[in-house]
Length: 412
Image (cartoon, rainbow, N blue to C red; front, side, top):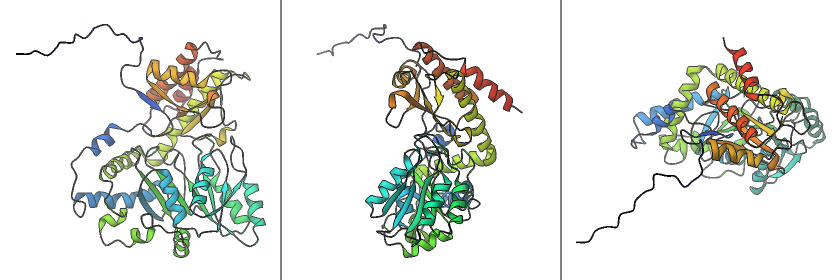
C-alpha cells in the first residue's frame, strides 16, 4: 500500500503584510460596483426565450429604457459594449462617403470618429481641448461654413471618461439650430447616463448611446441606442446597415428574440431589470442629486489635498460647471500617480482608474458612479489620503474632512 506524500502548510505568511484583506473596492469609472440585488437577479437557470416570464421582463425594459434617457424615441439593446452602440448608431443612420463632424473634448468622441472612419464614413474632427468642453461657437461657425450641407451628423460625448469633462449639450444643440443645419446630433452618454441630468428630447438629441456598466449598475455586456423620428428617417436612406446591428429587423418584430437579432442576453436582462427598479425606487432626479453631492465631495477633497500649490493635486477640469458628476480625473503634480494607485491597491484593496493620455504617471481617475453612498466614497478618499501620506506627499489639508463637510451639508 502506498501513501501520498504529505505537504505541511506553514502558518506563517511569507508575503509582506498588507491591509487589503476584506472586501476589495473598485473606484474606476466603469465597470462600476454591481449591487447585491443585481447580482442575485442574474443567478437563475436559463428560461424559455420564446414565451413566458423572460418575454415580460424584456417588454418592461423596452418600455422603461426611454424613461432613463428622457425620450419618446425608440430604444434598442445590443449585445456588446459601448463601442457596439457606437457602431449601431453610425451604421443605421449614415451613408458611405458622407461626413460626420466629431467634436473633440478629451478622448472618446475622437475614438468614436475613428471607428466610424473604418466603416467608410468621412470623418472631420473639430479640434478642441483635451481638458475642456466643446466650444459651441466653433460648432456654429463650422456648420455655417458647410454651405452644401455635406455634414450629416455631429458626434459628441456628454462626459468624456478620460478627461472627466462634461459638455453643454443644449448649447451645442442651439449652435446647430443657429446655423440652420440639418445634421443629426448624436451624443455618447456612456460615462454618465443616470448619474447626471440628461434630457434627450428636451435638449434636441437625435441619437443617444449608452452602456450597462456605469451608471446603470449592470455588468458589461449590453449597450443601448435611443433614436428619435429624425434618426429613424435617416435610417431609411442609410446605406451602411449591417445585418446584426440593423434596426429594421429589430423594429419589425414577429418573435421576442428578434429584438436582439438572436438569443437574448438573459442574465443581463434580469440584472438590468433590477438595476432600473433600484433607480426608479430612488427616483431618477434623486439619483442625479446624489451623484452631484458625491462629486462635489470629491472635488472638495482634491482641492484640500492640493492646497493651491502649483505642484499639488488638482482636478483635471478647472471649471466646476464643466466637471462630470460620474468621474473625476485628478492631476497629481509632483506625486507619482502610478505609485499612488499601486499603494492603494496592493496595500488597501482599492482600485483607482489609471490616467488616459500622455502623462499617465501624473494623473489618476476616481469613478463615483452608480451604486455608491457616503461611507463607500469617504472610504475611497480616506484610502487615497493614506496613500499620499505613505508616499510622503505634501498635502494642504485633509481631503476627507473637506469631503465630509460637503456631504454633511447635504444631509436633510
